[in-house]
Length: 351
Image (tube, rainbow, N blue to C red):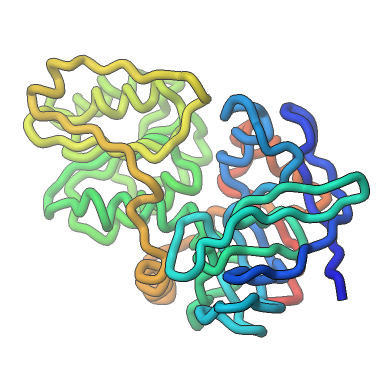
């Protein structure tokens, strides 16, 4: 029987997403049909919907890249999951077929989709974008394992690997930044500095163990970090605010002779960062990362173990839950910094 369901569709940039009824195509080899329980909302979707990524050649299309749900059906050759499995959906590639080119039927044609979408009641997903839900991990919290957590924690665990006594600053306290901050607490850092412009997020950072917080709307964060570090700057700066000037600030706040600035944010299409080349030859390093160098098949179980041990208080990120019909409110709240990580409840009865 054809599977018809509701989905949020982007038909035009800078216009609200439309809730439409669409029909899933028959599964091709390497594809999985998932009934969604929850979806997260990332700044990437705000960028897509509001034209921040430039010309969109795939309109109309569906959105969302972190979620959780239950497998309904599998296509030929799928061995990673089976019908009835509870799974995490994410954009970072893991093991399995990289099945692409998904298109859904709609009343007036077709709706494009990538290898994973989550602003919808069902999704046809590539096998390599699903990971089995670890035991003891709630399905609402699990959405963070699709993007925010593996990226933010991955920057710290897989890339920075701070030595004991290190100094570290996190710029931007959204889902990725707070995930990075939590991961820093797994290491013996001497200073952990949080930078943002929202007092509520800075208060959350203090609760999560930041040794100092800086309101970048009230003071120069680079000057403040230098004062806190005896004029040197931090050993590691992590940037996830999505703004060119913040990437530049994070680099400027990194110490010479071995300091590392890592950024995972995606500023608007066409924008460029400007760095003083002399700082580079003085031994500063800057690095962009694709997903925190995360491997879902390796890292999800590791991070789930840390969550179960009480070392990752992830539920604190969800300041509000939304219905699928409220997806545009969720995007607005995220863009206006009224929410850390909106959680979309699609079918909470699944778990």
